[in-house]
Length: 220
Image 1 (cartoon, helix red, strand yellow):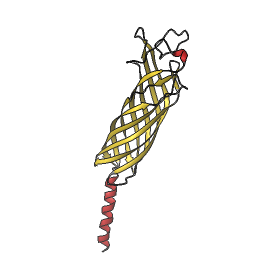
Image 2 (image 1 turned 135 degrees about the horizontal axis):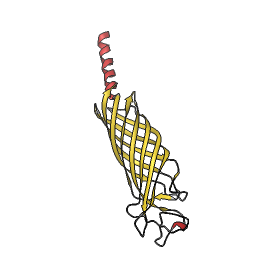
Image 3 (image 1 turned 45 degrees about the horizontal axis):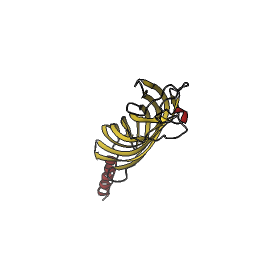
Image 4 (image 1 turned 60 degrees about the vertical axis):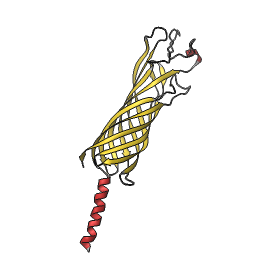
């Protein structure tokens, strides 16, 4: 009887272990996101268009959590500069300089690019048949590059790059599609510290809905 009782316990233990795919992993994902800064407290602000993000990550999953490194790139449309003195005859300028001789449009080619590197910690307990809701935090740096063109000449008038500290939080749900493949759907909020591009204040904060796949490489 004792031996008979031990087997169900072992079966439960094996099932629990299978639901927690411990080991190293790599992942790839993408999203549509929105740069949400449209405040009069900054010079350079976003438009209403959606931006795009793609990223890769790698790390270790163990006992209901993940530790990893994530590298992601984003692209956003630049909308304009706040303040009446920054507006030209067309009603919108993207660049401010002392003699007010340069005025940039908000048309094609005026972009904000970013590259973010974060260490990520994720808590994702198994709740039911391979479903794992999760919460994550991340911290690291974001490289911002702004580019915009002069209305008249089409020559680049804003072409600057800056590195700034950043962090992120996220919520979502992961599903174990197979012993070595997970699917992940989640929300991410990126915060970058307020900084300047060519003397233009910028606060970069984005909301994203992200879809990703992760592939288990090895067991722990």
